[in-house]
Image 1 (cartoon, helix red, strand yellow):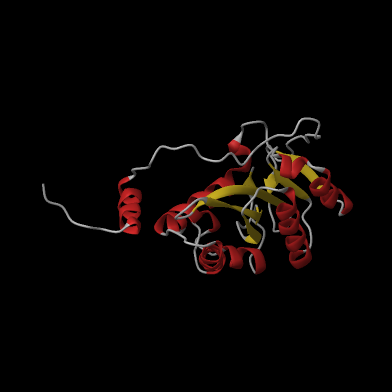
Image 2 (tube, rainbow, N blue to C red; image 1 turned 90 degrees about the vertical axis):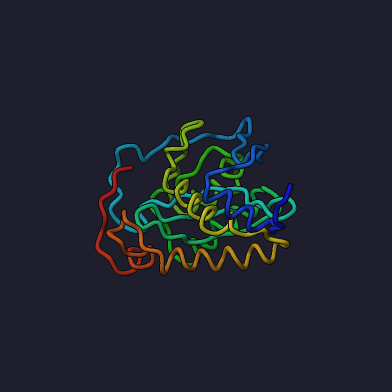
Length: 213
């Protein structure tokens, strides 16, 4: 039998192009904590018309050459702009609070903030930061990924256009490469749902949008 030698990264690229994916146990990023308060979902049927009306946040895992890290982002719902992000080797609430506080410091505050029911988002440190800023708290229904669909779409873009094409050797390498991609996503990647403008253009310069949640 004859064959040819190719690298791990090329194999991953070919698998993504052909829609082939390895089956393995993935880390859970949504883990409810008994006793934490769960807030109702506030966005159903709402028209999202302008920047800073609704922000959303979520966590996803990022596979590396060995192991994985976690990526958290704050996203402006109407414009799809990534307002803040962090990588962490653990899912402790502190890195989510840091990401939230960074977004608030740089972009003001939204009227409503939406998350899933993960313990990082239901704990007192996170909900307290929102409440102290007068921000209404909204949480997805249990297991209802569609309640935060725009963040799910971001994860797909990040993974298929960046993460799955790489095999990060270090956390520093992952942070640099993902940061470069998110700058591209915000500033140079047009979105059909935004009339083919970028999230930066939509967030900073465009008139209000009308999007049904």
